[in-house]
Structures are given as C-alpha cells and as structure tokens.
Amino acid sequence: RKEVEQDPGPFNVPEGATVAFNCTYSNSASQSFFWYRQDCRKEPKLLMSVYSSGNEDGRFTAQLNRASQYISLLIRDSKLSDSATYLCVVNGAGGFKTIFGAGTRLFVKA
Amino acid sequence: SQTIHQWPATLVQPVGSPLSLECTVEGTSNPNLYWYRQAAGRGLQLLFYSVGIGQISSEVPQNLSASRPQDRQFILSSKKLLLSDSGFYLCAWSDQGNGELFFGEGSRLTVL
Image (tube, rainbow over the protein chains, first blue to last red):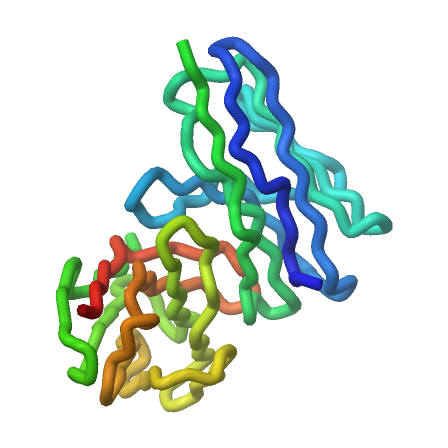
C-alpha cells in the first residue's frame, strides 16, 4: 500500500464547477498535512495547510479526518487558472520524511 | 527572506556519465533539506533528506548519492548515470518541525 494515495484523475470540469479531491495516508503517526499545486513542468508550491478543524482560503477548503486518515480539498467556482496537478502531502513529527501523493490532474474548461 | 536555488536547470547526459546537481538555501539556518525526483507524468519520489551537516538519509536504493558539506548546501551525485535516472529533480527545504516545503526551480535531466 502506498503511503499517500490520491484520486487518480484527471478531472475535467467546466468553469464555475465545484470539484473535490480526496487523499488517504497510511501512517497514523503523521503530524502535518498540506495540499500543493504543481503547474506543468514547474516546481510544486504550497496551496494550503490542512488542519483538523478544517480550513478555508477563498474558494478552497481543506479538511482532515485523523480517525479515517483522510484529507480532502474542495474547490468552488473553478477558474481556468485552477488547471494544474494537486498534490496531497503528509509528513511525520519534526518535519522529516515528507511524502507526496502522485497527484490529481485538474482541467478546467471554458 | 529565504530563497532556494538549484542548478543546472537543464542537462542532457550520456549513459554512464557522472552527475552533480547543486542546491543552496539562503536566509535560514539548519534547514531540513530534500532531494526529490519526478519522472514524466509521475509523482514526486523522495530520494534523500538531511537534518544537518553530514547527515543523509536515503529513501530509495539506487546509483545516486547525496552530500551536505555545508549547512545550506545539498548536492546530488552519481558516478554513472542510467537511462532510468532521467527526470525532474527537485531540491527543497523546510524549517525544523514545520514540514512545509519550499522547492527550488528544478533540474530537468535527460539521460541518452
């Protein structure tokens, strides 16, 4: 079993749609959780951290369920510029050994 | 502010040739440092991480090695490249205990 697993995608959605990505992790001792965005042929960049209480940043909402070892990302009112690969990221105590999921590709079309 | 820089950005190397990719971080002390590889259309694979000078942890057995000769310098090397070493190599740093990663611009390696 992979340490971090994501929806395989790709997701093809029209502008204005709401889309949700899921991610599961295998290590129950994991401490920190993030969503990163990666544009084609570029380095990943932090989109948002994920907290147990859930957190929102504009059109983006991230949630963590520690009991189920599950992370989600919701994007509302999708924009063309949201087209990218979204990476689920998990790491252990002390920030060591950060593990990335394989990513989910999103295509937003006009 | 902190910055991370890695080079070269692009290189094409023949099979069996050596490799050296370098990464430096500025504006922070004692960072965790990482090397990742991303094959075409694939996810990021953690290759090495370091929590201090001379301390290297290897995640995947392969013909690559890493060194950290200075606090903010991380080097990825190979003595003999394989075709399967082609990919997008990313250096990253994080603060101790935080976990958020900051990536360099990446080095795209093609082995022919």
